[in-house]
Image (cartoon, rainbow, N blue to C red; front, side, top):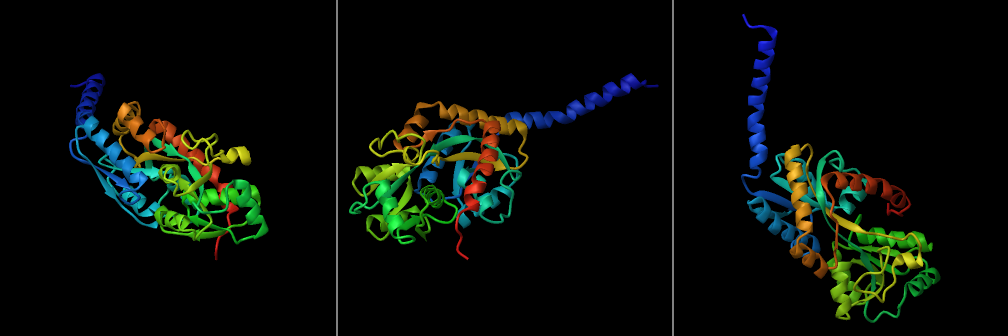
Length: 323
């Protein structure tokens, strides 16, 4: 007759044997191609970053990482698609703080941006440039604000859409300077820049990676940048923080997966993304586009997301909304 000790040993052995497939599966990840969902259109700065990361991840993981652009509803389509995907690590997402931490303050979402995702790691960050057209008579932030104060609600500000970084920075400036602008919402930054260069709107805040080449070619004038300090390329333009202390807007991209991904798979992604950050190839890529490196582990990204979610509540609560 078996005693209790023998039974306990047998039970433990059975549990260990049952766990073996899971361990082997984690060690063999990935064994098939990975899908990388991108919430913005092909050809833009987010898509370019996604394809660079996909290229390097493919090499590191030994499997193709295929980019899929899922557009719509200011990123909601891509995020909802991610939350409904299997959490086995074969579907991942590039998102931004504007989507993960700012959008929840703008309306009801079909998912929870904290509980619905697994943070995997940071990628890149960027600031915005306050831009006017090449023939604009406005040559400084002070002149722009003086004009807005003289004609309340008349100075037109081009936004890339509700909840985007451009809309937020415009509202930050409105609150900091105590002025009202005529907000004109577009579907993306490309038409904003077209109308800005054509003199149809007065100003906008543009992603710095787009603003730098336009500034270099003389297609726009950059009056200031939204980082805490001056941008490394457009040194002649002051940081908004110099004019309005505390004014700072830095957007960042990061990688997430569906909720409750296996810990071993999460660690693999976190480790690989940190390795990519250190490569000369990735550093050259972000340097060329005006991005800044955002090396963050999965745990650090989780904290960044929670902190950003809390940060933007007050600003957005004060933003005017059209009824």
